[in-house]
Image (cartoon, rainbow, N blue to C red; front, top):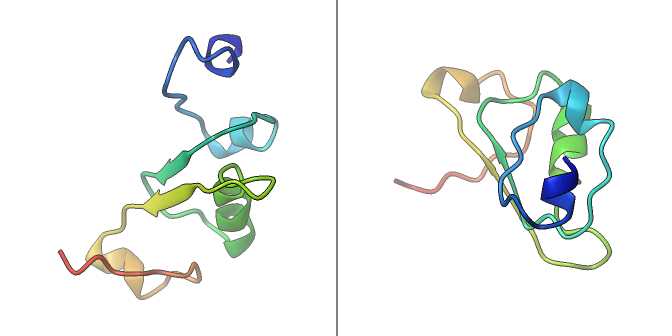
Length: 79
């Protein structure tokens, strides 16, 4: 974690448990490999990027089966 904060490591892989306990500045991207269980978890995850009026991107990978039960906002890429 300290290497990520010091910009020595470019990628940090974290679970929801770890993600709730970290505070890192200048996160440019959050990539959700799976959908969070709740809307609150989704907002918390993507809130790691674009803080303090900075621009960031949140990307969530979903399968067709995931889309119908998701409460998270979804924008389809069309691809």
